[in-house]
Image 1 (spheres, rainbow over the protein chains, first blue to last red):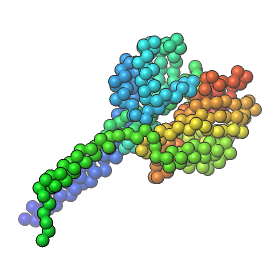
Image 2 (image 1 turned 90 degrees about the vertical axis):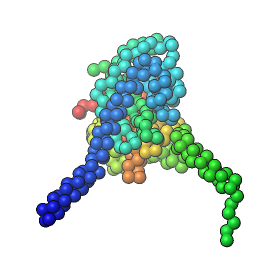
Image 3 (image 1 turned 30 degrees about the horizontal axis):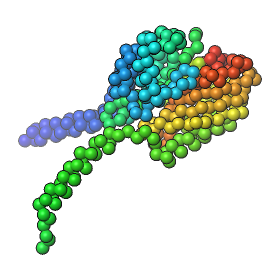
Image 4 (image 1 turned 180 degrees about the horizontal axis):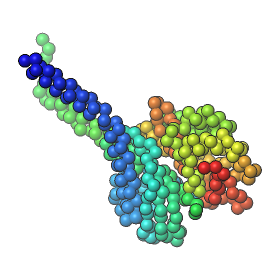
Length: 156
Length: 181
């Protein structure tokens, strides 16, 4: 009988420990998941820009989206989508490197990357590397792009 | 004894309740395009306080106001962490800023993060005496931590049409590199 009680107590402790461990783990795991998710969204964002996929951009960008371009142009969601859809614009090659999640919480993520652009658009040569800060927010359970600040890097 | 409501009335009440409940998700899904006026005003003041602190050298404030995740991207793409940028402001390469004035501040609020865009005028000189006057459009990211707004990111872009032909290299310019790092 004692052995039965002992075994039951052991099982209760094991189950309780497991529950406590499960209760603690989402914080760390959640942060790791945010980093992974926004890094993927970074690539989706640039792929959509490359492919002139305005539907994906409309899906990804928050309504209050804002972006600042090298040279200081500030555009909102619709203006950015219109620029991407512009038939005068060549298909730019866009490639993000060195994605670093600088800040992540349950509903905000801020990352930096180095985006390499190759190509012309509207007669302007965009060849070069750009340093970018991208901001993502979770709205109604879905991560969306809130904005980006882009500065052209000087040649090494 | 309480009089019972007519059956039709009870059905109407239930109908109203169902209609209200069905509208709730739409209300929740709506994204406000303008932040509340009080928050907008608070963040605009914060932008001024931030730049005033950098101009006057109130680095204790900057130390508290900059989040550990703070990253500054200058117009040449040069990137600084909080420690690196505060190191410059505290060190011998600290620029002398006569004017550091944000105008046309636009607030984009997303709950616990806000993106501010502004047009910042800089007048002053670097530690070598080189003038660094210019006009910049700036992207600023602030996050709310423990109830306080803190700066976590800045991207500066010199306004192309307002570049001054006579400018020499300075710390905000395209080819400037610090002596350290």
